[in-house]
Amino acid sequence: MAPCAGDSVPMETLLAMLRKHNKCGDDKIGADEVTGLVKALDGDDGYWTDARLKSLLEGFGLDKGRLNLASFARVLYDGPQAALYEVVREDLVRLMDSPDWEDGSYAPLLIRLAWHSSGTYNKSDGTGGSNGATMRYSLEAGDPENVLLDKARELLETVKVKHSWISYADLWILAAYVAIEHTCGPRIAFNGGRADAPESKAVAPGRLPGAEKGLADGMEVDEEGRMKGWEKLAAHIRDVFGRMGISDKEIVALLCGGHVYGRCHPAGSGYAGAWVENPTFFSNEYPADMIGDKWIPVMHDTKMPDGGEVPEEVRPAPGKRQYIDLSKYMPEEEEEAEVRAAPDASEHPAGRYRCVSQWVNCREQPDVTSDIQGRFVQNQELSLLAVKIFGTAIRGLTERGGWVSIVGSGGKTLFERLGDLESKMLKGRYRARTSAGASTSSEPKLGAAGVGKVLAGQEFTVAEIAFGEDPDSGAVFGKLEDSWVLLYSREQGLLCELIVEGYNEKPRKAIKGQTGHQMMLVSDMVLLWDAGFKEHLQTYADDDALLKKDFGDAFKKLTELGCPWSKEFPGAAGGSPVAPMTGCPFVG
Ligand code: HEM
Image (cartoon, rainbow, N blue to C red; front, side, top):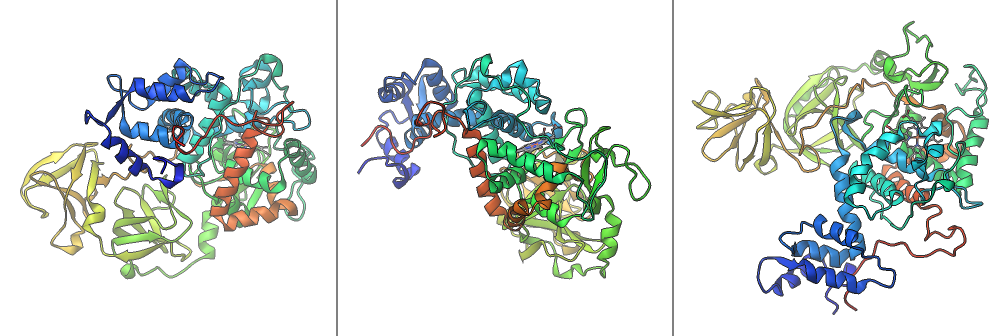
């Protein structure tokens, strides 16, 4: 049997075999041996330059001339070229979240960079597209549609400097794939091999779609609230995407998956606001809200139904028109329509819960107007340490910080109870979250003699959990080496938060300025108004898993248009992408 036949031999088996042959027992292999093997694979094209080898070896933690066997197994398993891109992926993941940038994430900006570098493609002559990275040149960078993307290009410079062998064209697309995956979108298999083109290939402005192109002047709408001239805007969208060879269904998937991210900037495009409540997380909130909510057109100086101005967060610059979500603008209206008796929380005590909705936002406070911190998705399980009735809703405090609705204000159940709190779900690494830290005592009892404290922000491991003697206190204690720390009590609230991988390894930052107002560009609204688009919009509103798959496929197609391996590559029948490879390249 071949020792590593791709899918058929698990990574762990391969690693165990390598370990058996590791004579010096240090769990490492010499970098020279790896280099020799990788170079032996090289065809005549001399792919494995010193710069690529350096990235591969250093990326996998080369230590005193030797490489971890686990990393080497990964190289064997995925193929060295795919492993090389994996190294760049890891560096990209590291720059993705930043408290310095809007909503704490560069993901939206990087996704837009990849879309705009690809969206110039013209299938009839093979010009434009992601192969070339021609937005580096002023002609294309100066397209008004590309405003603010200089920041995305600048951000990626550090990665380019570290991995000088990768083309800008590949880097921009890989960064978007990483951004999408990192924010719970689909994982898109990356094919490398795009080349950077000279300035003569830069595309003049005019190929990217405009959000109001074709609309009549003014604010006149028909009886269904559609702005005059919308049919021409629909035709413009079909023309632009049709020029690339992209179908109606793919257009809808791309917009649903693209505009779930980020926001518009009055100082950039002139439009304002985010399309969804949580703009740094993949979901089908865009089609669901587009269909489910009520939208009204606004300009900069539109008077709202209450006589006031358009809320700043979604107020476009003078001369621009967009839609805003009326149901979010007037939450009282919604509440009134759904007046219910106050719920009874006795069926929802603290305990283990499972999310039964497609997604549920996690907020800083039990109040639904407080800032969003994160989001949970269907089937995710958590421990809720406390439960509160809030208006007509029941809300629970999560062990990792933040509140979720167990039952929403309209009566919908969002979390189902699985059972009582369990020690095994609560053990783990914690962080003290209040400025006063958390006190420690010799026994897991409220009022027991204090022996010290953990400081604000300090992280520590809890190996054992104890619940307070008085169930009404709700107290939960965690065992440190020789004392107990109070993690939660009804009186003091959540003092320490459980650190959960992929959620709050870094303390979570609430999404800035998101007060619940949402927007749609007129070009987004067209998906609702045009019967051909709406059919797909409805499908994606009902099926988030299908959207995830179709968005991944459509984004891959978009970003590979005109690439050397695609069938439309000018003057060629299409070649092979550089990566990924699977299976063992060295054997059989
Ligand atoms: C009819 C087609 C489209 C139009 C008219 C359009 C228009 C716009 C506009 C005006 C903005 C705001 C830019 C700013 O002010 O910073 C924007 C942002 C954005 N667009 Fe699109 N777009 C379209 C399609 C797409 C597609 C297909 C994707 C990706 C698949 C996408 C991804 C994004 C992202 C992620 C942002 C947010 C960027 C940020 O937060 O910095 N868009 N779009």
